[in-house]
Amino acid sequence: MIATMPQACTVGPDYVRPTAPEPARYKELAGWKVATPADSLDRGPWWTVFGDPRLDELMLQVDISNQTVAAAAAAYVQARALIRQAQAGFFPLVTADYTVAESRLGSTSGTAVASRPRLVSNFNAEASWVIDVWGRVRRAVESSVAGAQLSAADLANAELSAQATLAIAYFNLRSADSLQDLLARTVKEYERTLEITQNQFAAGTVSKADVATAQTQLLGTRAQLVNVGIARAQFEHAIAALIGRPPADLSISKGALARRVPSIPVSLPSTLLERRPDIAAAERQMQQQNALIGVAVSAYYPEISLTGLVGLTGRGSPLVSLANEAWTLAASATQVVFEGGLRSAQVDAARAAYDQSVATYRQAVLTAFQQVEDQLAALRILAQQAKIQAQAVEAAQEQVTIQLNQYSAGTTAFTAVVVAQAQLLTNQIAALTIRQNRFVASVALIEALGGGWETNLLPSAADLETANPLIPQ
Image (cartoon, helix red, strand yellow):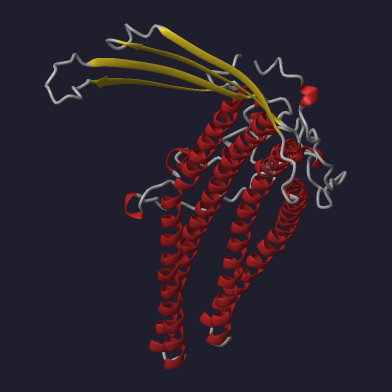
């Protein structure tokens, strides 16, 4: 039925994807390996690049239990239903009614006269069909199909966002675990320092002030160690919410933050437009709005409709006596001759909505390139910083060893030891923070690259349009 409609009668502009600002290369790509082929990141389980079984286990629960993803999935189901709703305009509307009435005649002279009751049965069927001559229904279906694809892209984007958020929370939790281990080791070292100071005091070589300083340093670090538990608990609670479970139902055992940050291959900028679900959603919204221009333009043309009525009536029992037939068939064309500029305003509004969607699409593309560049720069600079910070930790460790030996020998004041130990802990925490930031930036880069998603994973227009069992396939 739909295939026989001449496409030349579909009014409104046909959709062509507008151009978007697209660089030939990434500014921050120097030193990075360009991915070959473009889909080198595994589709779907992109997080396996980190080689963490516990992270893999948690990630698999996002699609099943995350409520934001569930809401996006329900929105996609609703969008597919709207396609069938729009496709209903291709078919006639048929109504039917059936009535049975009983009547009895009485006497007019006042004398009771028995009369037999009469049954009268009526059956009517009416059909009306607005013929889609100008393509109003076709444009509405096109808009609904684009809307469903938009919703599918939103669903993919919600999944990717939830996965990336979970991965970041997980690596932050592992960083808190590593910080707790670092502070626990430091507490043990400070306990040994306190013991040395107490021995020196007992020998009469140092004052009580050195012992008090050592105790203050130890207790302050213990308090720091306890405080890390707040952040760890909050990250664990966040992970529980992301996998759709109450915090009381999730407990993640301790584990250190990995030391090796995986290398993330980066494809060329031209592929980014095909790998980001948010860009795909913005692009589908453009087609949706473009089709609505055609719907608005179709209001300028007359509405051509067919109506038909078939009726049967008769006396006697229902259905058996419907012998008298009546029918009508009519065609009509309705044209609005004056509406005070309503249609032109509707067309202008539809065009403006399309222009707005074009600007939104181009901004989404610019934002995507910015996010990739940001994370490329972050990873490059953090890698350089990590090397320098590792040297700083090594130098600070050596300084602590020297100062402790000199203090034990009585050739230096205890304040020099305290300062050296504080510098060592500060540098060790800084090194851990840099490693934590590198993992977070890696996740953010993968998310900015689309996480392995591609536009060919969207449901095709043909699949969405033939989902209605009344539409011939």
